[in-house]
Picture (cartoon, one colour):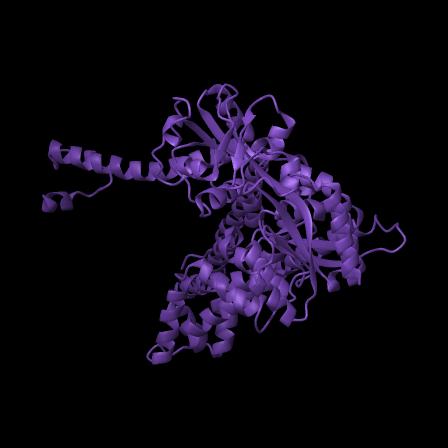
Length: 320
Length: 304
């Protein structure tokens, strides 16, 4: 008798467990029904993987796309640009996020697997180096920036960077170590991702960096270009000399590729197989059509009209 | 000194043993007690600081919208629904896999295995070892065998559940064995003496009486699986972003720790509030599971 009641309790628990599962399934199908308007309802799964720098763009695109197409599941992973290409060329993903162009050997792997792909630019990444408005400096070379920011750097005054610079105590501000901005800057300036001097004021909030540089005559910091573009009077963005003379940071110089090395395009890679599926094609088209809002949402520089045309042409090329 | 204190009847309250211990000894005793309490207090203090910090950060977003909304790149809309559903799917699957396997393994080891045989001792030793393997190792194993390789299940609910099952199975086996071992031998002997077979003894005596210990141990093991991020990170493909709930075992899913990780890494400050609120949900689920463990234990506990 006693054991019987116990068994029935166990059975009740088992039923409870399966109810939980059933509830999840039910909830999911509920959300699928209301959007059943539209002529041809798209469905399926789009697999995206790759660079964590590009991921915010693809995530924003995925989110927006699924609002109109709730039967399409878009999964965005972050295995890194290299890891993403590995999966992409093994046919495991439909779209690969990349913060650099595909390497020859990666392209060879793709070709060997019979995967025909196109590189589509989806946004531009640009970093601005800023100083106080009262600072007379207008241009810094990559070497000078490295001298200031390299690990173990002992530079504490602008005149130690270059004797012609003013006698101003250096106060450094920058993003925290887990931001993509930090990775990008350290990679381009110090030659190694994550290598930086540590005695600076880190903040994930751009406004803290802005206030720091505004409040210190010798302040110097770096962050995404979009802020400087929107607030040109708050700070002075210095030109950067990457070897070909000083170039002012701006959307134009990032777009035409002259603002080096702190400006770069961000890509997604798609295959002929991606566009063969209606949901894949629709997603890519959505991505480019809404690239302005997507880039803004992810805090990047949007595509130029020319880049947009080029991107559309690439999608057309994939259709064959 | 030791002989003197050894005579004391109540060791916990040395002050009561008036006249026995010298005042110096009483001071040392008291100091020791204070030291022990300080150790306990330190652990609790860290927990309180951690909890209050999370609650203070997360409270503004700890509401129904958090579980009603899907993950989003817009901080004000960001929720955790797909991650919470993913966690529920995964944990129910983990329970379905580990409980039968773990209990069966424990019954074999305790009731059937001949402990003088070398292979049984080898199995025992390895189960203990497996319980100490870092979770990320199981992640690599899951990536090679479940996500890719022979099973090729991708980053699905099943892959995540199988990987986490490997992780917690040794813990389930060990706790279940201890529960079985706590049953007095006289119960088994009595059952056998009355003519019951071994199977009948296991079914009618051993398993019902092992419920409290097994349930407690298993639920604590499942709680560990819920909080794991490292192995899931490997099998699911990094900090995945999914805005739909899983619909079956083979659909791709994200879980709460991954979603929290994803939010914490974003540049906008508001996401940290969402992450803290998500941590509160995770803690709440853990708390409920632990409460269930205690309830089950109290309900089925028997004194021999």
